[in-house]
Image 1: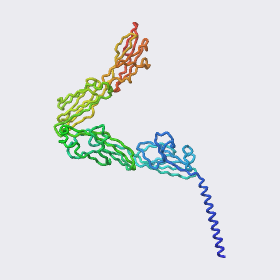
Image 2 (image 1 turned 90 degrees about the vertical axis):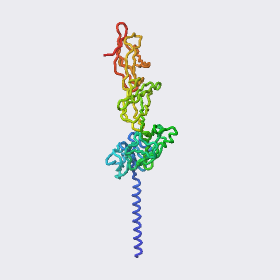
Image 3 (image 1 turned 180 degrees about the horizontal axis):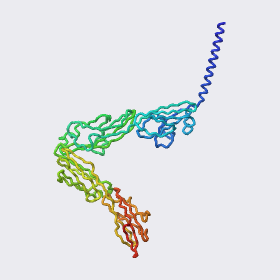
Amino acid sequence: MTRRILNITVLWLFLLLAAFLASCGENLYEASNIPQMRQYVYMVPDGYSGTIQETNLHPIVGASAERGQSVRFEALYSINNEMMYNNDAALAYKSILWKIDGEYFNLNAFRYTFKRSGIIEGMLQTVDEFDDTLFTNFTIRVNTPEEFTLVFPYDGYNQAEPSKPVDFPLRWTLNGIDEWEYASCGVYISTDKDSVWSNQVGEIDCGTTANLWGPLVGDSAMLYQKGIDLRKESITFYWGVKYTIYVDGAMHSRKYSKINHFSTKFLDDNLSTLSIPIKYLNYYNTENPNSFKTVAHIVSATGDTLKTYTGSSYNQEILYNFRPQKGVKVYFEEQSKKDYVADSIVVDLLPGTATQTDTVYFRDTQPPQIAPTRETFLLNFNPTFHIYDDGSGINPSKISLQIDNKAVQPQLDGNELYVDPSYCYTQCFINIYAEDYAGNKLPSIDWLITKNESGFYHLRRAL
């Protein structure tokens, strides 16, 4: 009897378990019919006007940006792994909330500007139609703008030891390297400015210091046998740094510094060299590049004339040796194209050094001039104006002509501008606009042509 009761009890337990499993299976089946929504976070450039599916972008987990950069965040969704790229997604959720660096947004897509550097935390929260909440967390590395400066030798340094076996320091500063970045600096040096970036002498961590092994030039006696006398000759070196930023072991960016120059000093301390580069700005007459008459008066601090230099090219250099002295003044003048002027300079010539000044620029600061070739003429004579510029020259593309406020094609032959008188009957007003290559504008003058009783035309300035 007891065995039979046990058998009945086991049977009921089995039936209850089967009923429970059947019930669970029914619930699982119903849950599988509920649409499964997923969300994705995208960050695209602010200026991009296309759609996400037109790009090769992937949803972000970790991304990078620059401080001050503007981007567009956008939320995309899928239902049962089928992406929704249109407004259908807005019908599939009840609410959306973004949080980026403490700021909140409730839009599907919006513009955002990164205001600070560092690791920015972000979150997207969406509540779907079934009141399920989706969370996506992401981080963005916002980079600090880099600032690179060559410190030593500064541009124009002229005290480098040429032949002593001493190290020569190279110093720079690089600011803006973030904790996730690594910077490598390649050092480039050459005696030819145009080939600096082809001559790398080493590469180190940008945060360390660099030194050139001495001597910079070599043994002075050996160089003298080759025709190089370090007692009165200086060697100029040009140098720069190419710095590469790495993120997670991959190259992120590569930039170049400006190129500085430094020179070795003379072994003879009783000698000093002065070098002055000269350039004429806005001169484009390649057919006559030597049409200048440059004069430079080099005067000591006491007023004595040390040298008078003359040259004729639009790009030239003054190069003289002097005894060391301070307060040397250099005055410049242009005796051919007199619209060009340059400021005077003062320079100290230190013992045993080659001093190269900044480039001296001659600038054309004077406007062109205009005058009629004659003031009275017959109808069959074209009124002619002579346009003159004693500097960079008249720019033909900047000449325009108006007769009674109507644009007329100018007829230009060299510096002569012809006006067709058929546009005038009894009288007309003429306006001529012109510039030289330096951008100096012709003074605004209104000209008046009138016809007198004798049939002659008279040209004069309008009052």
